[in-house]
Length: 209
Image (cartoon, rainbow, N blue to C red; front, side):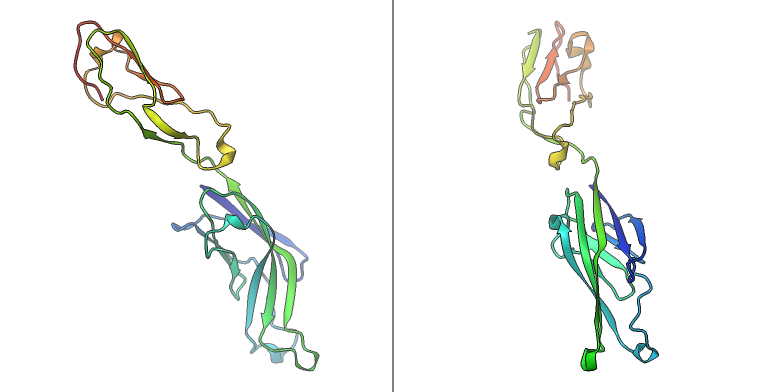
């Protein structure tokens, strides 16, 4: 999981505005007003021209973005991008504003603002996960204490390397069956390595899930 902020300077590079947004279901973000005061030129006879933006990565982590999800900017200054899962960090982009008036007679059809857009993807805690190894534990009635390794396998603290330092624990909850088969009706426990331990009550048998 990720959260994103985008910031941009306007076309004169004189101010900086920070935005925040929530992603839509497909993981994409849209930020309006990243480019402001967009002008086709200084003369009224240029009002009929069309303008477009080109967004080029300047520095940072390109892997933040899903395939086809690199930032792009529409003519009204709105930025769109789509994040890759389980990535966080920063990326900075240059923005080129281009009109279709051409460069005849010394005309200038582009304006480049270096470092105009910065995308910051903040890390969030991803859910842990595990697989079930040995799911059926068979013991003999009244046989005391038991320990089974490998009941939980492929235990992950999250999908990001920055979660490797986290501590994890398991809760074991009785879903159905007979709790009285366990000593003092204390249901099994599972340690962080996926090992299950329990003690059996005397003269009891049955099943518990």
